[in-house]
Image (cartoon, rainbow, N blue to C red; front, side, top):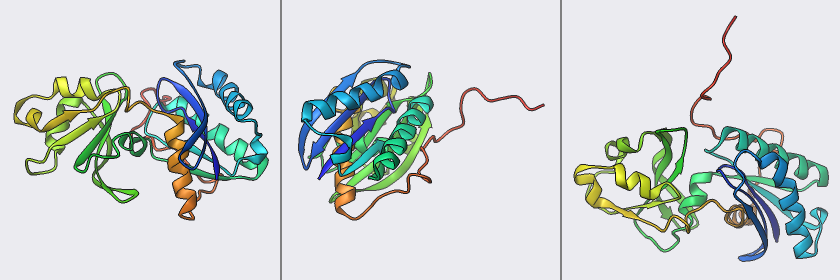
Length: 229
């Protein structure tokens, strides 16, 4: 099946069209705070390059978070609007699971990490189980130096994956540092193609989300809130 994927959780914005494990088209743009302006253009480019239309797509997948609050809202609103407009299935893909999927052959503990607000990262500890993940530590936002307090017990190595992986590894001190492995940050970058592929796996398993009820995963309150009167 052909799935259109949207990724807006990070500083870059991307769209991709996949069919099975084949990437038919992908457009990626490093455009901080320009997701709203660029996303539809990237979608149009992918559909044009693949020689198809939105109506011919079988389903849509969107990065669910955590990530940029504004980016997530833009991605989810766009995905919902497109899915409802052409009456296609929609599924949300947890962002940290998409990052962890960049290490498909690592059999141990995987820790996807994504920049959050200054001084914090989003992370989780997962272990692969077939085509899904077991959460050893659920997603949360915290300073990188707090990572050792969440490490699963034992001496098993932990693979840090994602664009924030080198930074996190450099800030961890003590015995915990010896347990950490660091994946190539480029390989672990957020990609719409991976969102689309994971979405297609969910569709194949008979899963889909209600576009009217699907909400982003924020993990923490916004940095700026309105004052009460």
